Each structure stands twice: as C-alpha cells, then as structure tokens.
Amino acid sequence: MFPSVRSFLALSYTLVVVLILLVLGLRTQALVEKRLRQEVDAEVQARAAEVSRFLTSDTDIDLTEQATRGIIASSGDSGATHLRLYNPDGVPAVLPGSLPPIPEADARELKSVRDQAIRTVQGRDGRQFRLVTRRVMYGEQTIAYLQVASALAPVNRTATQLRHTLLYGGILAGIVAGVLSYLLAYQALKPFSSIVEDARQIGAEDLDRRLPTSYGVGEVSRLAQSFNSLLDRLQKVFDLQRRFVADASHELRTPLTSIRGNVDVLLLDPELPPATREALQNVSAESARLSRLITNLLLLARADAGQSEPPARPVDLHGLVLETVRQARLMSSTVDLRLVREDQASVMGDADQLKQVLLNLLDNALKYTPDGGWVRVSVYREGTWAKLEVQDNGIGIAPSDLARIFDRFYRAERSPHGISGSGLGLSIVQWVVHAHSGRITVESKLGEGSIFTVWLPSASALAS
Ligand code: ADP
Image 1 (tube, rainbow, N blue to C red):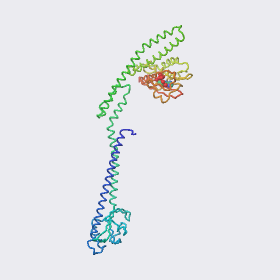
Image 2: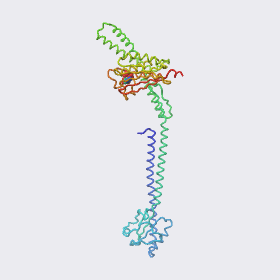
Image 3: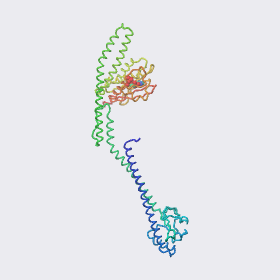
Image 4: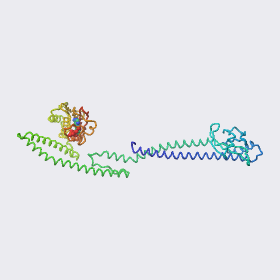
C-alpha cells in the first residue's frame, strides 16, 4: 500500500512517463539502426556494381588490372569498403593494397552464390561487415566473382551513442517527472490536507464549530460545505439526544424520590414480616442505585450542554479526601481501605464534583477488590500539581479494556457477575478532571490490581 495519495500519483506519473519514453526510445533506436544499415547496404551494392562494370567493360585486359582500375575509379568516396576478387574457378586474385579484413570465400561457396546476396560476416579482426558477393558475367560466361564489404562499426557506434543518449535522457526525464509530479500532487492536495486537519480538530464537545468554506479549490470547498451540513445534522441529533436524556432524568427523579421516601417510611415499621422487610430493602437499594444512575446521566447531559462549568473556588483536597474516605469505609467492611499519604494540597474548583471523582474511584476500587484485599489512597503535592492516587490489589483491568473504560456505558467484559454498575462512573470522573484542567491516568495488571492517578493544578499554580 502507498503511504499517501501524493506518492501514489507521483509514482504513477513517473511510471507512465518512463514507459512512454521506453517505447519511443526502442522504436527510434530500431528505426535509426535499420536506416543506417540500409545506407551501408546501398553503398556496398553501388560499389560492387561499379567495379563489376569496369570488369566487363573490356575483357581483353587482365582481370586484375581491370579490377585495379575499378578500385581506383570507385575509391573516391568509398574508402570504407573492401574488395576481394576471384577468378571463375574461385581462386583469389591479388589486388593492390593490403589484404582486406573479410574472410576468404571458397569456390563452392562462390559458385552457389545467389545474385547480389548481402549478409553480415565477422571479419578477420573480429569486426562485423556487410558483405555482398556477386557473380560477374560477360554474356553467358562467368568471368569472375566479386566480394565487396563495408564495416558495420560506424553504424554500431552511432547506435550505441543513441542508446546511451536515450537511456540517460530517459533516466533524467523519469527523475524530473517524479519530482515534478510529486510537487504538483503536493500542491494540488494541500487543501485536502488542510480540510482533514480542520475536521480532525472538531470533537463531540465542539460540534458547533464549522469548517471554513474557502479553500481556493472548488472541489475542496464543496467538500467542506458537505461536511458542514453533515455537522449540522449531527449537532441536531446530539442536541435532541442530550435534551431527551436531561428531560427524562429530570422527570424520573421526582417519582423516584417519592418511592424511596415511602419505602423508607414503611421500613420504619418494627412489625414488618421479615419477607416483606427484605423485599422493601431490595426496593430501597435498587431505587438508590437508580437514583445514582439518574444523577450521573443528568450530570453528563449538563456537561455535554456546557452548563456545568465548575465554579473556581479553593478546595482543600486534604480535607475532602479525609471526609470521603471516612464515608467510603461504610461501603465495604471486607476490604481494608486506608489513607497512606496526606500532603496538604489545595486546588481550584467545585468541591462536590471533586468529591464525586474520589467517591467513584473508591466505589470501583472497593467493588472490584475481592474480600480481604486492600485499597490505598494518597494525596501528594508535586510542584505545581496536586496528585490523588487510588490503588487497589483487586481483579485488575485487561489491556484491551484499558483504553475504553472511560467511555460512556462501557463495562469490562470480565467484570465479575453480581457486581452492579452502569459504566458511567469513570466517564464522569474523566469529565470532572478535564473540566478542572487536570488529567487522569490508569495503570493496571489483570489479577494484580489497579492504580488510578488524578493530576490537578494546585491553587497556588493557578493564582500565579
Ligand atoms: P461501572 O459502573 O461499571 O463500575 P465505571 O465507568 O466506573 O463503570 O468503570 C468502567 C469499567 O472499568 C468497570 O466496568 C470495570 O470493568 C472497570 N474498572 C473500573 N475501576 C476498576 C478497578 N479499580 N479495578 C478493576 N476494574 C475496574
């Protein structure tokens, strides 16, 4: 796969350019080579015809002398050709000048020659030649055999030069095409990168933001408009859902409070049969749970609507922790809950919301720690931060669940049966901590326990 559209486009363009150049180059090379060969052949044929003409012009003169005259007459602009002459029996005649580099033909070969057959031969020095063999006739009589050859070296040299030019030119063109197409693709796709970056910054909490619609490119601006209308629709759905949750929670609260009140009154009756008392206690516990759930839902709905900005009042974290731990001890008698470090620390924010954070963390720690286990709470002052730590040696959280436990309504798959919960506790914790400009981290090992750490900016740091 390609890492980006840019590199995909650049590579595709480069491949197309290189392919076209390759086809064109091979075709040009073949055409030029063919044309040059044809020229050499024409030259060889012309010279053979010329010498042949001399040989047949006056048969009274000695063949060698004739040939010598022919060579001299035709040697003006044909210095690159070589000649061999044979008498009718195929015996080579000695011609002036040095021995030609083409191999000597034997009589059988000469006698079976087709008229003006031309072929490529290897010379004595290893070079290649185009060679024509010709039977020289005077009337019906063969008076000689003639061979004329011309070296192919100049043709080969030109072909090699052309090949190199095309090769290096092709490589250069490929590189230029690659770089140019990458730059062009980069330039053309830049608005898309901007739109992606802008869209990435829009989260569930700021759905009222919109993308700018002027990206300088028609298609991208239209994409931004479509994205914006999608956000419009999404925001409407979110608002509806938020209003529904807030309204429903609000409406449920009043009857539930009345149910709890009435059940509590009924439970005051000392004459109640045990079975009825047990049933009423169940109703009371379940309605308390329902009440907590509704409170949480209402809190999150308000948080989503941006209505629950925490007021910035100094909160004594140390006192708040002491009080909450004392309260939490009532939740479980089988787990040892201790405050192990209590630095003095003060933060800015809402005491009720911060207490809710610690209560939710302690509720979880106690719930997910089996009987006989322990939970440790610590408050540290670290530089400009106040650090609140809740550690337990309970069942721990699997790595696959860790990333999702702060999601709304998420409960780990391995949550033991019988432990009730709504999956909202940690979402509220995270929201409150973020609203107080803090952060929360969690470390956990399955079967060994968990540590939840909340960092809040200390009041002195915010004041300065
Ligand atoms: P719940 O109401 O289910 O406890 P939370 O949002 O508080 O919802 O927690 C989400 C999930 O994270 C829980 O269902 C549980 O699986 C896991 N979890 C939270 N705290 C702990 C803990 N201290 N030890 C083990 N698991 C925990």
